[in-house]
Length: 342
Ligand code: AMP
Ligand code: MG
Image (cartoon, rainbow, N blue to C red; front, side, top):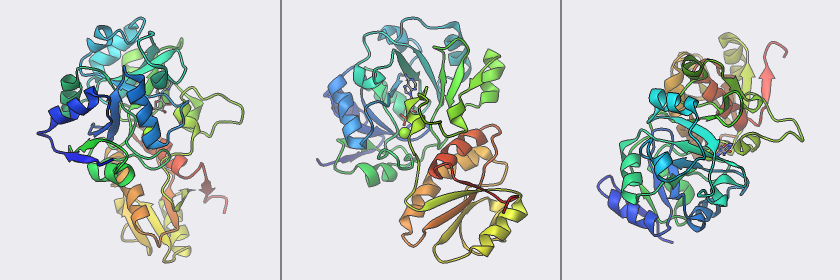
């Protein structure tokens, strides 16, 4: 298959492909999505094939207006909490899980009785959804397991020849996937951290739980509330190791393990002190910038085939730092070296 590269003037071409049941890489403010008509099970199945995504991992349905939830009868009932969150954070990087109707194909919900819905803020994403005149199922547009794409080039690196088209809308602003919150449980619970922080959600809803799988590896035999959280994820080919300790401990450990095959995924403040190849995520406490750069840095590591080991600090869990933490700890396969203990 020849993958067309479209520009921002070609929204209608993208929409025509989607209406005919095709698959298109689309820009969103979080990461690039691999979109298909969410109400067409056959079209959605193509997304799973292109990504190599396990069929038990459900997809997020993207809409271009809060009213689309009712218009397309996506959910049984819109909870009050969803209305409050939509008012505060939509359009934006927040996905809400609600009880689904029979309109949702089984490919989208992966056998669950719920559906995940998001109203993205990216103007091109909105235009494409409106022009296609249907909600779009769209997971991140990477091969399953590799870092999510934040540019059209990243999408092509993974998907060239496998999808109908990609629409280039520049670099994704947030850089990590949306926050996923389930409203189908008694107490709202965050299943995946993202651009909207737990602190912000609590300001609107009061009590909000954070699922165990956000910070920790799931214990054997435990069912994941969000199936995506159980897979090793976001990993470059090199081995990522997370170091827990002070700034000084991090720098001296990395310098003591210097070598041509080593790269430090670090912060701006570390750059002059490290004696190995470096990639900086941004300033130490600027979590928004770190999230914005994270996946691009992980992909750059793969572009340098001599790098076999990547040393990164264990990120903070504050604010959007929690989203960076959640992705990096998966990229590292949950491997953390405690520098206090070495
Ligand atoms: P991605 O499409 O790559 O952003 O991944 C979507 C994430 O949302 C995955 O972690 C899914 O497991 C999760 N997800 C989507 N729909 C549901 C649902 N109905 N219930 C729980 N998690 C969901
Ligand atoms: Mg993904």
